[in-house]
Image (cartoon, rainbow, N blue to C red; front, side):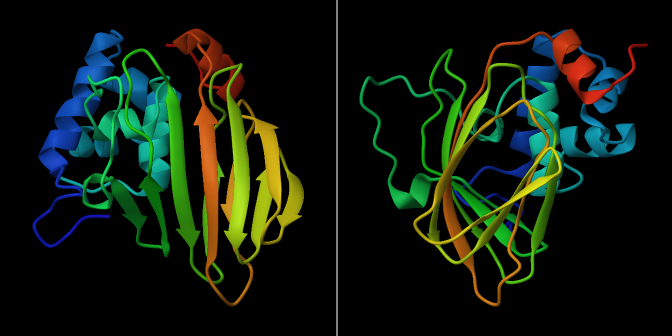
Length: 209
């Protein structure tokens, strides 16, 4: 997920990522313990990420973003200010997981818009894990470019071949895996619905303190 200098592809340092995570948490009036509760990520991990002391996996980063009602992209980038925004490949944020998969974020962060367009690559035999439900009203679209993708929605399994596409409500538990012997490359579009932390906690089964 990071290069040898401790920066994400695109140049964002772990310290800068931690500062953005902390700012998003404080803007929502959430204590560290509350974010840990909503995300299912341990308090110590949340603290380490905020301090830039530990590199989160893609799954952990997604759970933190989901608990905040936002996307990974918004944690990685400042909102674009121009009506037309071009993202050269060298400026696109790429997050890599040690398990063998990566997400390249193709869409800019826009003020007041929770939308993410990404290209993902999952290595042979890699299971990216289960992602928490996003806020009610969220929508996700998947299109497989090459390989095979095992898409799991609330326990139901859907096998997608190259050229196949799928839509599913984002407020479901969902997972991506590649059971084949070669890479799977797919595109994912995610549009987040608006919801309060209480709605999200109810959906994920979090207990209010």
